[in-house]
Image (tube, rainbow, N blue to C red; front, side, top):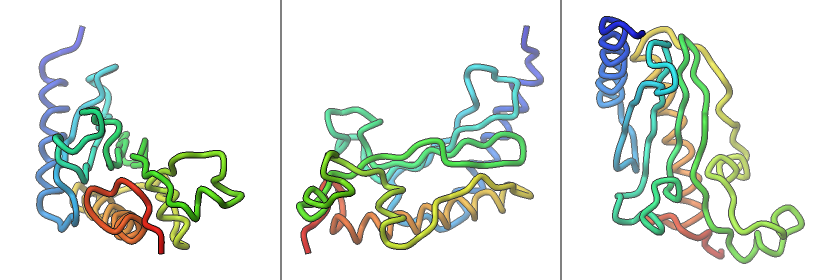
Amino acid sequence: MYSSNNLENVNEACDETLHALNEVEINMCNSVSVHAGSFHPTADCQFIRLDALDPHDWPNAIGQNSVYITFKVVGSSVEVLGTGHIWLNDEDKNSDKYKYLAMKTMERCHTDYGNKKFRKTRWKDRKDLANKIAKYWNEVMESVNKYTGGYPYKHGKND
């Protein structure tokens, strides 16, 4: 069975991460949440979700339909676990690359503007982790904002 000390350590680590994230500048973000992995709560695993939409703006009131990025932190490494989606604009709907799709991920919006994906990387301390996450979020949201024209980031705008 799990000991209460391990669970307290995991919760303390989540609180430290959330505190570090609150200390950095994260643009166009309405909520930040940090949760311990629920499958094995004693493992050094955290899930960090940054969300750009207010809960009342989530399509069909479902959080997975929102504009978000979830990071997975295991030990001293961090990687992107998942992102939200943006509806395509008319130009993309008619392109060979996207003609069979209705949406593209936030990460794809970001890479379409010539930027790089977030690769699995190591971090030194909570401040370094928060800086890496905030930097990537700010870059992605700048691309998403450019593609959609602004909040609530639903559809790609037609230029």
